Amino acid sequence: MPARQPVAVWLAEHGAALDEATRILVTSALTLAEHAAAEADRLRGEILRRGL
Image (cartoon, rainbow, N blue to C red; front, side):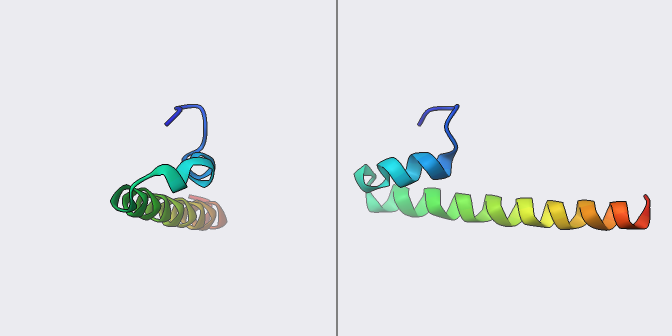
């Protein structure tokens, strides 16, 4: 997996070549990362809103 290419892009292009277990693990990791990023954005907005 190239370091310069987002994992989601790479997975969309090459995911079919992965075995099922690897595809599940990568998809799960992407989902967790997306949720973490959304939560970080939410918290950042709350901090800015409160002027902390």
